[in-house]
Image 1 (spheres, one colour):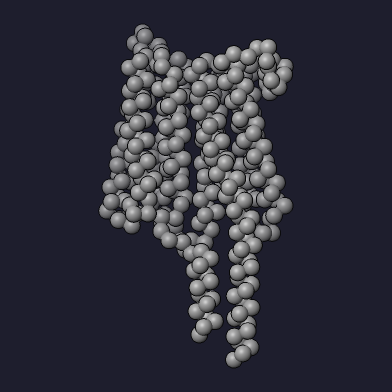
Image 2: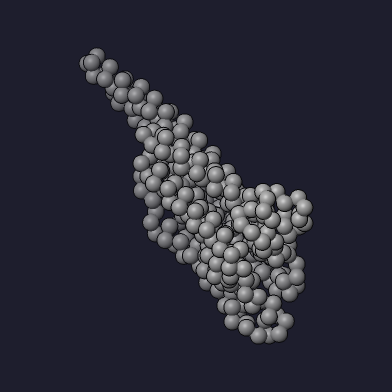
Length: 322
């Protein structure tokens, strides 16, 4: 009896040490992941501001700006925006490279999927940097600019999914139908963003509003808002019907509703002012980034209680006491 009790006690101590040992490394990745999310949202917004202020070619060369890292002699608002956008992109790349390096060094102490996912993230950073160079080389080609933004969104989505999977490393089973329901507005928002960038990078909005020509892209952008609104309202209705989903996710769902209607308001204000107020357009871009971030968080987070250290320890304690 004593031997059985002793064996259970050893397993209990080993479990504590293993859980605490792993949690130390995972906590570092979670903190770095949170910084990455904020940096990526800032990068997307600054990129939008650069596009709105027509500063995409303010630095005529790449990766330097006027042949130097810090072009003091040419500095103005447009040059600063383009220079700062590149600096932020560089820092994001370094942060992701650092996380990838840590995942290789600590690969025996973290989940097996983490180094593989960070390698995907690093690949996306390289592709993103390549598109950044092409936007300058191709003189702000519309498709290049659009691809540049969509890859930035993919970086944001991948980073958030990693963070949530680290939080939910031991969930019993995800709600697949809930994830699929949330994936619909996420996909629609990405498509809407694609249309929006095409709208601004081809000057279609200005041409349509000024001369009533080439209005197809602008009208498509307007009409595409309806399925997004419908899909979000369906998610809210489902959460209300399944009260557990509403209880566990009400903060995210409330933010989603707020962002949805503020996004519509900013879009209307942008058109009413003939796209002459950069603050509305930049706010529109920020809202879209936050909207995608929250939808991604809802998709990958566990809406219910997960198994954790306390659950495992309690099970072991019951075994020892018995």
